[in-house]
Image (tube, rainbow, N blue to C red; front, side, top):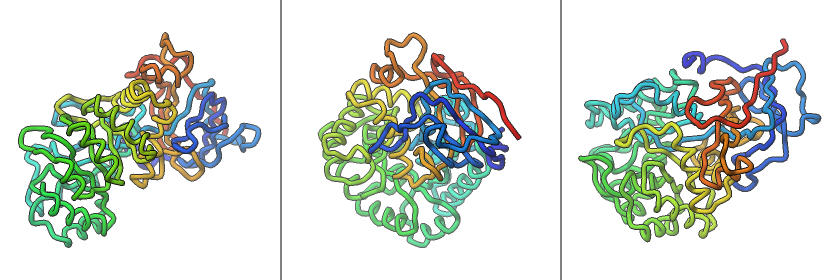
Length: 399
């Protein structure tokens, strides 16, 4: 299935009887629509069934009144090769995370590779290899955007030009290598940006022995595109410093599962008070010492909705449209021309919430009934979430 993911096409897919359609757009989180039409992996139409061309579909899906949401995007992962992580010696973690509704992952560095090369030639070679490998291989159909070199002392502008020309579009977490000073990091971040490479900076205390503290002043001076795990990964900066970063920087505010939960809530609230919720994106920062979190993004959505008292439909946008826009991805939003990556959800069986959104607001994660990537069904009822009250069904096809 993973090999087929890169080459198979969906044909025409018609999804009807959608009970709740989450858009991913933080300015308009809920759409007044019950039907989506997909053509060869891209959204062709969104609206009411009577207004959409539903004829001659290759695949028909009855959503059975459930919620359809853009596929979740994990903004911060540490893959290595294939669907294996040496950090916990675990197989199948990406496919398992797809069962948690994640359809796209973004690497913050392939840092767990045993014997990871730290010389400049080696780190460039690893980044290019990881980018190529995950471009060719999609575990469970998940789009893994990998090849994120950890910058080291001695790199020059030519190195960033070479990486960009080879197809590298990301930097690993600034601060995980020998470059830790704000001024030095700022220069390399600027070179990366010049050649279209997006940067993320480590924020907070050391994640594992051998890494170091990156404080608020270094984060502000380096001016990376994404303030990586602003709530620490695991150890957070003081809450006041995190709020200062939200206020003084205009960059993306990334909140992760493997961080300080109290500070995660504070950062989300700060973004709301500063009227910049569009800057908030979510990640897991896994695999890590705490393991793999297949439901990590759903758990973050439930945490922020319930504990920061944010509308659930808005928090879903943190993990979809916000990330897509900041990361410049053609997914994450339900609108024509975007990738047909969807997660079908309903309230978990026996939750106290009367609706899916109410159940998330109460702190429960939803049940997933189906995941679709590029218009192709990748799983039915999730093996990892609590059982959804209702699940969609593939009702037929016409050729």
